Length: 286
Image (cartoon, rainbow, N blue to C red; front, side):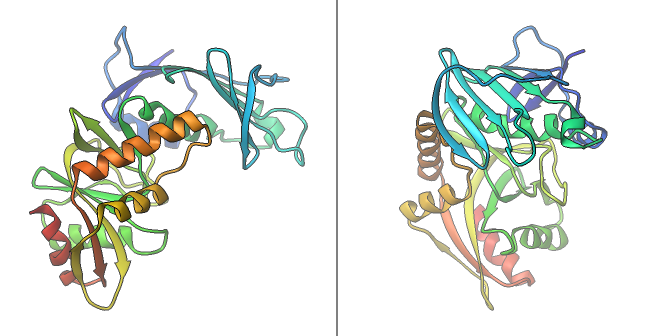
């Protein structure tokens, strides 16, 4: 039986067998059935002897092998130290609007709770959004007074700590997504969306607000907000977005990053973990 979800404004039809925890987080993004979903995502489980896709080999990253096929793209995961069989195979059309995922039996991986459909859905959506002026960014994000803010930094810098300060000191603040929010350009305007994939803290809400600014956090003993050069902002945002290994998809990714930075103010926030840090970053809403 198929289910329908809305992610970043796109309706996804899927028959994926999500595990219980995944179903709970996905439940906040349930959508009404439609005859014309943006994405159709079919999942085949317990597939024995999954074949390699036919096409041109592109690249291998972390035991994932990408191919350009006659009708689109494909990748498969294979760990020779574990088995000589393919573990997962994804096949998509040219625009990632029709996707099929083939999964080997859980016994082969010695797992009981199969989380692959849930996590691979998030990974594949990264490519889907490239065809809809969108992307998934490693950041913590919030909404306040109908406006969105995105805080990005390397892991461990204090993104979640800072957005939690907002919820403590600024009533009415909502965390949109604490780890991997969606940003989509709609008629040239960037919008911030929540998504169920939100890191170890699992903090997210099904919210859509105009994105007001991108803020890159740096630790300091005092707090201040300063404008960032747009070119530096592009490079910082490149670091916060997983880079496609397929050249055509990488080009789309760079184009979207450039459009986001062009449409928004970009700031550097040097901060500690005090109320002054919140006061400094609030200036990004003005």
